[in-house]
Image 1 (cartoon, rainbow, N blue to C red):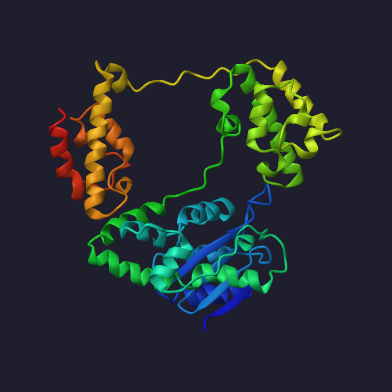
Image 2: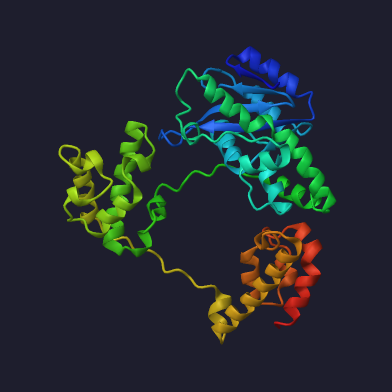
Length: 378
């Protein structure tokens, strides 16, 4: 029977870390509050050895630095499922760097699994059916105390990962693909949190590309208003005003606010005051002028642009055939951006092989095959 312990003080965290540093591997996961708060933060860190889940509460612990020591120690393998978000969150909140990572989602992709979500992978490789709970998945992990059902839910995310890792590793080795995932895991060590560019962030709103300069000026003003309100209310921006409402207002700034879905309190007096001020400010601003997207020199210099499309189609067909033969997602076998560059210049394989996007295992396994395909395009 697996045990679950809630770690709520500094001294116990130190003891748990010392214990886990003597183990070969530890499963790791986090719970955050991004669906409920503007100031997103890690609210719980789940660690598991073979039989025990330690749920570390960083909202109650003053010094979490020992946790960073464990995560950074190369002698202990850290087993995640879909590690990218977790790694960025550890970096964002505490500057922790994680070394020696094993990602069961990536591993599942490389054995050809069609379903790579946590529940599917745990059922397939550990024989455990995890209870589905969308309510707990989307709950506010800032709230305390943590109820028993939330603790069990959090523990389930890590209790079975080490068994999954063992089973899926055996499959990878049988397929001679273990070295492939090792390179993918090594790349995860460089993952860092990147703060958004606050001046250009409004351009990430879906639908912004369809706006003219004046509409973009209004969108920029509305975006900044929403950020201020989200920060003031400590709510995620999508719960303040959704993106589609910002686009509606930016494309038709004189529209009756009562007709715009998603505004809620901001669509009626007195909540509409700040929103209207933001619209007026945007209308008074100079239209936003964006630099024209520069076409790639390689594409612009092609005498027949259809040649590029034909070459790319052939290269993607080559990759798809490999995927069918190996029963893998073709996107894993060679980067699309790299194929696009090679479609522009098939003679550039040597240079392309030095690209940071292309893995060593890809070059080793498929480089000669790709070279043969490129010779037919030249």
